Length: 564
Image: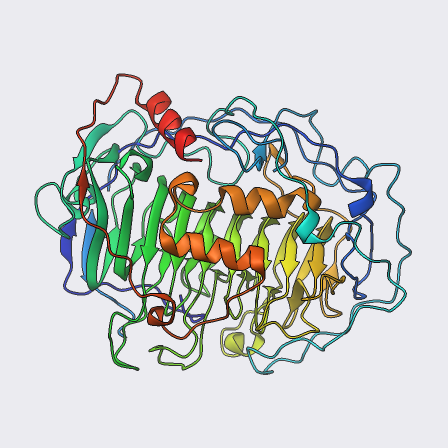
C-alpha cells in the first residue's frame, strides 16, 4: 500500500467468493521466564547495542482473557485488475513456534518488574530532536554505531537454543488484536474444487458467498490471478488453507485486499511478482486490509513474497481518524519476504515489507520472519498503535523497524500528526548483504516512540549491533499490549521463527525453503524480480475429498497442528 491518502479501488470487478466462518484459534503458549542475560533497561533515546533494551517497571504481560463471541452479520468478494494501476512459551503440538498466549496473573500493562538478575541501565541523554516538517519522507536516521564499551550479546544467533517441548493448544480468541473474531465459525462449509480464478467451485465464488462461512480446499496448487486482485467484501469468513492437499494453495501474479471485518486467513501463500508487466503500467500488487470496515482480521501462517508495493500491510485513508481505517488486525507466524526493489512500481525502487498506515490502531505483528525487504519491517506511521513482538528481521536495507509519520504529508490537512506509539519486545535483527553496518533494529524518520524490551541485534560478523537509533523516543511503559500476549525471550526467537513461520511450515514450498535457508546461512540479497530466484512456483493440481466432521473447529486445529 502506498503511503498516501488513498484506499484501494477495484475496477472491472468480477464476483468472487466469500469465506466461511472461521474456526480461529490462537497460538498455544506457556509463560517462559525472561532470560536475565538478554534483558536490560533504558529510559532515553540514546542508542543501545545488541544486548536487550527494556525497563525495570515493565510487566511480563497482562493476564489471559477468554474469547468473546461476536454476532455474525453479512456484507462479496471480487477479482479485478490491480487497482494500483496503476508470545512466549515452549512450542505446542498445534503451535511449535511457542509464540502466543498462556494464563498469567492479571496485571495492568506496564506493571511488574524485570527479573532481579537484570541490571538496570542508567538513564542517558534525551532523544535527538525529530526532523522538521517537510523533511524527505524516506530520510534515514543519523547513523550511530554502538558504543565500544557496550558488552557483547550473551548468545549470538547461530547458537540460540531450539524450541522446547509441546503443550496443549490455547483456546481461540486470546493473545493478539482481532483474535476475538469468530470469522466463519459456525457458518456454512464451502469447498473449493478448482484452481480456476472464477466460476463454480472457485475461491472467488466461495468468497462472494454471503453469510458466515468456512472455506476449505479439495484441491492444491496455484491460482493464477492474471495481474488481478481478489477483494474480500463479505464478512465472517475463514480461509482454511490447511485443508488443502500438498502442496497447498498459492495465489500467483496478483494481490489480495480485505475490505471487510471478521476475517481469518490461514496457511495461504501469495507470490505476487511483476507478472511480466511493464514499468509504470500500474501493476503494483500487495496484500492489504483497507478502509473503515476492515477490523478484527487475522493473518496466521501466511507466506507473502515479491510484492511490488508492500508485501503485507494494514491500511486505509490517512486523514479520517482511527474509526475510518483498518484496526484490530494481527499478522502472526508468517514469512514476509523479498519485496521487489527495482521492479515496475511507479515510484521506482521499492522493496517493502509491511506498512501500518496512519491512524491504524491495535495492530499486532508477532512471530514473523521478515527477510530481504529494503524497509518497512514493519513501519508504523502517524497515530498508529500496536505491538511488534518476537519477529526476526534479516537483511534489511534502508530501514528495519521504522516508526514515524511523514510530516510533509500532513502540511495541508489542518492536523498536527502525532507519532506512533508501539511496544517492541523480544525481536531479533540480523544484518545481511544489503544491510548498512550502522543499521539499527528500530529507527524513526520523525516522531516515533516505543517501549523497548529484550531486543537483540547482530551485524554480519555476529557482533552486537545497534538496537535503537537516537531519533526514537523511548517510553517507560508499554503503550499498547493485547491481553494474554506473553513474549518469548529474544534468545529463543530465531530458532522458533525459522522452524514455524509461514504457510504449512512442515510442507514448505521451494520459495519458503530457500528464504529460511538464506537466514540460516546468512546468504541471499534483496531482489528486483522473482526471476532472479527461480520464478513463479510450478505445481500440478492435486486433489482429495474432504470428510468434514461435525466439530469443524477441532478438525481445523488438528489439520493445522499436523502442518505446524
